[in-house]
Length: 369
Image 1 (tube, helix red, strand yellow):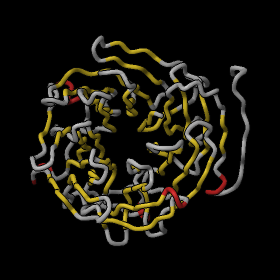
Image 2 (cartoon, helix red, strand yellow):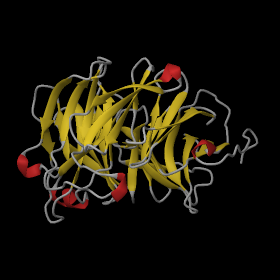
Image 3 (cartoon, one colour):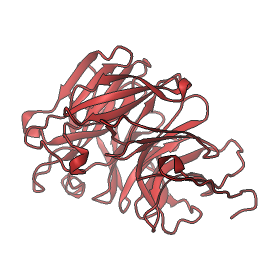
Image 4 (cartoon, one colour):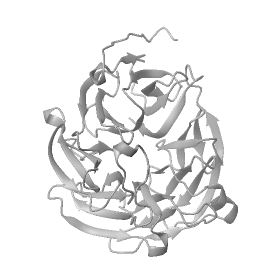
């Protein structure tokens, strides 16, 4: 470890006993990245690292994490428990200091994602009202310690990821359409009747503004993740629950008032995707979408203007993606421990040598601070 960093441990017991193990680098204005990860001992963390591969901090979690939401103002990030977990951990984005430890209602569980309003005031979380088989969106007040102040309908089962459009008010929700219950773990209870959708919802009133469904023959194509370009085009990605021998399109583009435009990769790439997309991201200019397929060990790239296939990168168990800030460039993380910077134009991939990389298993998503 370099001399300009320090380690300390704060321990406790139970959920409130999330240990923070900050390994804090001096803040020189560098961009850094945050992701959930696990170690060889089955412990789960949120970890932050910079472009040089130096770890800024690791925060021990009470269970497996999934995604991290970054406040657009201030320095807070929120780690959200993977389904069917219930914890929310709010921490300082630079030091890893735990600021708040919360749980969802006992009759709800989280789906691993959350998003801030543009002013940083409200925090929205997709949740499962499992007693009634309905999806809901929890709304929490970040200025009051993330106290939940209301709840909106997601207008479908299994809301997984959500995003905010450029008006700062409209939420777009990826409703996977799958009903689950914590008593049955991660079992999917309604595959024959599931009906995934994209729902556009007023973030204040909860009014349903628009909802788009797939065709009946694609009703098992669970819309799970999404990303939004600066011009409000939505890229949604899917996980097919039908026969393995079938190879439906797994990526869709959508603009309000239109039907979902489904995209298909070349035959060999489509087959490699193995009916599963794990995350989606758009580059900073909004020209290129990146979509990971961890089961197939690849990340595909698509033109935002027309949805044309641009190529792929091979990343074993690669799922986490985040835009680097440069056009057509992304960071890609692997469940096998690597993190890579990939430039689409030159098809150049460079590994970031993260400290203590051995034994890391990066989880599905990354965030950029």
